[in-house]
Image (tube, rainbow, N blue to C red; front, side):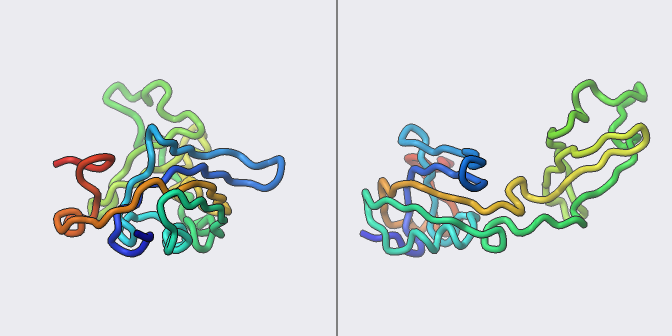
Length: 170
């Protein structure tokens, strides 16, 4: 069996960003915690999935995904200033540790979609949050191996995610 659309793929991988000696490991998914997804329905960058098409069990992969094909370039319009008053609670104080540089703060937009803003600057009267994906602007380097492939069942396809072993159990 080969990786193709609507197959459940189980893989292990390492994700790096940066070049040469500046390469930084961002994520490692090993055999104790592999990634399991339905090809074509994962929400992962399409370029990631496209690079796996045609691979079989025990095949290895190594490829890079450009920012344009990954999580996009950094959008300066996604850097938003909020009045510090928005973060104060009933006693008029900001909870200790909340506005540390790098912290993620959950928000919902007008349609109710959840998103996280990363604290990038804190000033006496305002806080700048970055709503870009944390990997925006990065070239993603993947190295890994396919460890299992199977057909997705109709319920998994209808729900858009894997059920059972290594996936979501309802």
